[in-house]
Image (cartoon, rainbow, N blue to C red; front, side, top):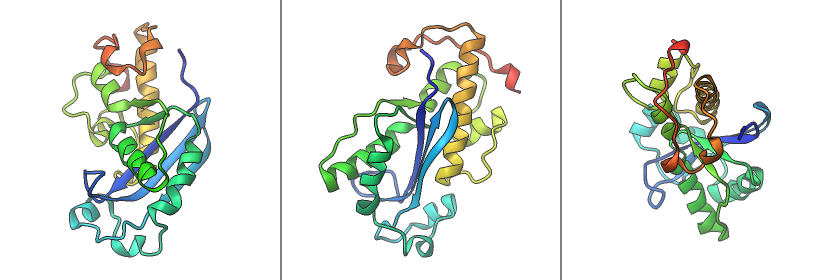
Length: 197
């Protein structure tokens, strides 16, 4: 299985719980044959104060989102943008769950897109790294992410990480990508990434 068409997605939020916290930024980039063809990107007004920890992490503050649209004004447009594409992200379940919660809350809709997590994949194919955060993997693999913890920069970095994972799989003659979406049953070996150092 060769995956060439997909959407890479990232969100920033006011906290970790989809039930109690709110989305403040969304970026989703649509790729065909690994080339960007469309993008959905917006700040979101969370209708609450952005905690100082989140401001320090993302650089997003209350003033920046003051005139941004509310989540109910953008989430359906995102839903349409996603179509039936496979969604890729780093720790994608976090982003996916926030989006699905808001779709259900405001439009009674459920996401049916398959998702692929570069965090889980990298743990299986990339060894000898201190941590599997996107920031650390970018450092280890020399991926540019000049504006980490902003959605568009993280999306582009995640796409480059996904391409590196693909290359590692190919270099090690791993041909069983039919199980790509069933992460727990993947049989990818513990491969080296030395060619990227």
